[in-house]
View 1 (tube, rainbow, N blue to C red):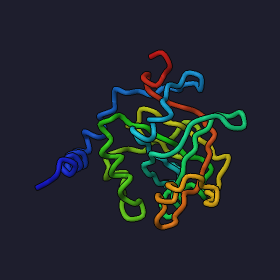
View 2: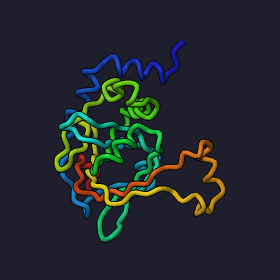
View 3: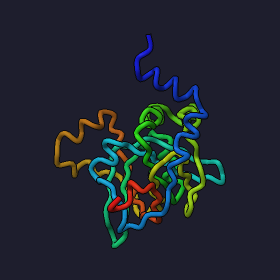
Length: 202
């Protein structure tokens, strides 16, 4: 017997027209840094986002679901910080290309994001199988998604590795039983495009 999760996956992936057109009424517009309304403690950890790196025009990119990271200001510039384990396929694109996007989706796409987090782009066309659609970003090479309700367009301005000797909380090591410590990427936010729910005061 199928579990509820399996039924949801089967329904989503067997109905491409549904997934393609679900978001037609949600139009994104550019939102200024001072106008953006995002909870930095829940946007990633609870809603999840897709981290996408590569080049849309070259049809060379990959995406992965992320739940860890941060938003803030560094070197007088707005930034997002994301972390990627070295074995992830997306890491190759984060290393090769200078830009990436972070895309947030309506709650009905949670199953699609779950699928993208559990499958590798090396082994399947997980974007198509998840029922979501890439599209050209406005300012950078890395793709965005048609169904997303908010997209951060970012340009890398720092990368590095965790220095394990600097872990002050012993629990941190428990997240790395395979010693596959994340690589760290800071991205200057070049532009933000979102629906009205992400604009301050709406």
